[in-house]
Amino acid sequence: LELLTLGSVAISSPVIAKVARDNHEKPDIKFGLVTYQWGKDWDIPTLIKNLTKSKNLGVELRVDHAHGVDTFLTSAQRECVKKQFKDSPVTLVGFGSNVQFDSPVPGVLNLNIKRAKALIALDHDIGGSGVKVKPNQFHKDVPKEKTIEQIGKSLNEIGKFAGDLGQKVRLEVHGPGTQELPNIKAILDVADNPNVGICWNCNPTDLNPDFQTNFDLVKNRLGSTIHIHELDIPGYPYDLLFKNLVGLNYNGWLLFECSATDPADKVKALDEQRQLGLKMLSQLHVK
Image (cartoon, rainbow, N blue to C red; front, side):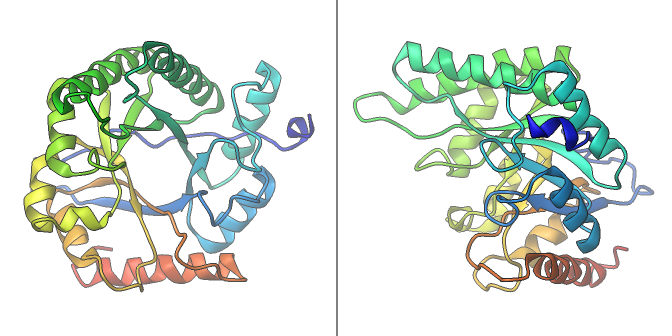
């Protein structure tokens, strides 16, 4: 595999956010990238080079993209990936997966749990700190409460596995029905393993009935990754999100998951988005 020549990555960021109680502490908010669309075609060296240039110094790798990082990697290849990040200023925050725990078919559910554990082990080996998973939807003829309990119990199982490896599980606020924050809260009430947190996803449904009501439901379970989108596209109250994060002394990553636009120069666009984010934070007196 050519991956052997790509290099390795070292990771240092925690996955469950630190919600500080001490008023003397300050938030530590950093910007990075989810390679969902922007960055999906970059191999590891290109990714590190472009993120370094744009000063977005953290990355959540999407599985199945051009980075070529998946569970088929040998021990030597995993060490190679780890070293590339370790030798760079870019933090490998973890993986973004499509693993989900909603299926009413036991065999499908078990395959997803097995896949999640394999990705967590891989993330541990390459120096990441956690894996993003999905809830992911409700099913006709299956009581909503049953699906919520199933998702929560699955998260507890993989959360325990992750904890043994020093990893975290990041539940993305995602999916029809399941992305509604009262349902995420219900899932978290079942998934009480401390290694399980949420990845806030900046969805339109966050505003139903209003941002603050929904944010308050889950703010004590925020993980150390939050997905944000293009900050200069109107419609989402990023000012309120940033204000709340500052108020919590949030310690974690704001990761750009951009797909509404497709700029030719994505490195320049990433830098512009980062600078806009810093400007918004500076207006809250955060440096």
